[in-house]
Amino acid sequence: MTAGRRIKNAVLAVVAVLLLVISIGAVWAHQVMAGERDAALEVWRNDAITVTDTDVSVVLAPTTDATSTGLVFVPGAKVDPYAYLFKLSGIVEDGVTVVITKPTLNLALVDLRPLATFTDGVARVDQWFVGGHSLGGVRACQYAGEQETVGIVLFGSYCATDLSDSGLPVLSFVGEHDGLSTPEKIEDSAVLLPDDAATVLVPGGNHADFGDYGVQPGDGGSATSDTAVRELITAEFRSWAAPVVGTDQR
Figure 1: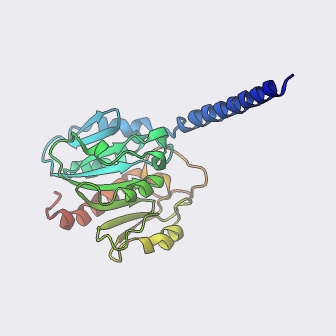
Figure 2 (figure 1 turned 90 degrees about the vertical axis):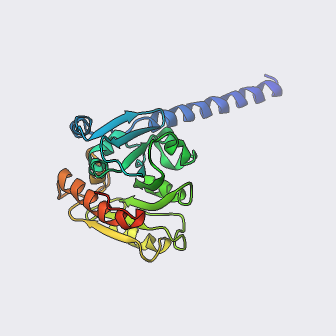
Figure 3 (figure 1 turned 90 degrees about the horizontal axis):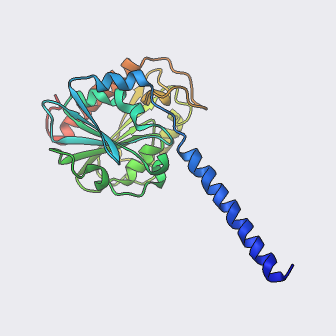
């Protein structure tokens, strides 16, 4: 075999290995932690909420009494966007439109699309909170300053972007038993947030309690109910957001 042919075969072998790695990675990225059907169906059947599936997001809109406020929510890594419908539905009932993104490859940190990808075409909303769960919250912090962003909401998450001098209001939900974004890790990263950032402990809550997708490896045990977490998120967001947007969210 000539030297040229050996080089050609070696190059083809490397290309084949790279294609295999890419294929395996693509399959892995598309294997998501699916949302629990009953929780999602409860929102679909809620007359106070209209659910619209788009190419880039799932939009939850109030059917009546909608405000001009919205929340763009970025899912955690490899979690089905529909897994968050129930926990966020109380916010929607308060008049806030919620847009749950569909991240590229189901991984928020590789989704480089601008915030406008998810907000353009959403009716009536001109003030946007951005937030997310786990690594979705990390990505949400990167959206700070885009468009009409008025605040950040973290769900079992933290910022890797320094927002300490941003002046943006921040609301951070922390699961008491979160085994992934532990209370200690969130506290250590709080130096990247403004001094007046609000922290809310979810008693008995773990990492997966911010959605409805079952047990997550490495997480702590949950000692609360889905309804209790939903009610806490709704009430705390309502009281925190009202002075930010200058209106009563009810």
